[in-house]
Length: 267
View 1 (tube, rainbow, N blue to C red):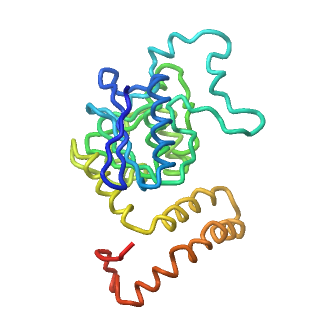
View 2: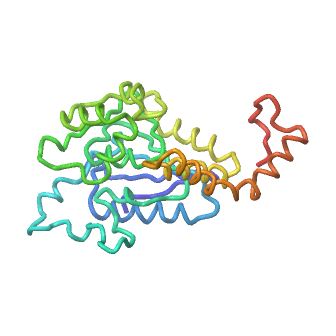
View 3: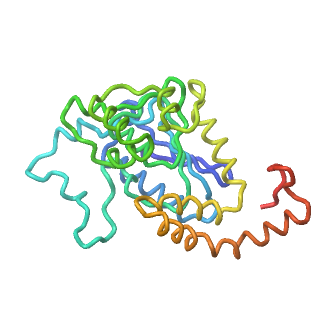
């Protein structure tokens, strides 16, 4: 097994371990990652996941040794999106087509390149060690971005920056990623997992129906006119007021959380 889960209360760390291949993604690892994240999303005791590559590399991309063995006119036909709009099969990098209900944080050490960059972009947030980097390194071999890179990177950093990164295939350092919005937090070398897990616990301490509702609303507004986006936000969120918001307002009225105090909110 190349994938395992380590749990710390509501925070689950999903670990991909193929260090001999710099955590490049082969079919077995992709299947295992999908199963791990589906398990996480379905478990009521889990709130936030961290994705971490063991051995100093987040993910060196799609396993090109495996790719070199593919044959036929349509060697990836089993991964095609179905014409009837049904649930698609997994992506080449595994969970990249899953639409989870809970947040996932990428803890990036070393390379997150080619498909590994796409895997990091699938996550909701990215914590990068100062020595980590992204890059479309598959540019050298004629392998296109197959797993969301041309969709998610422009949404994070803008079309022009995304095109420059994609077309040149150059190395994008953690500092640059932070500056342009491709990652949200930096960590010292070797500390990305620790910082990502701290961030996960920060998120997990809050009422989770509200966290998940706001997260989903952000994704659902993509491409919508403002009026429709506002309607979608309302429809996504209104039931949470009854489920969690009124009782939370009651805790505030009783004296909790005043002056921006997050220490004792009694979730």
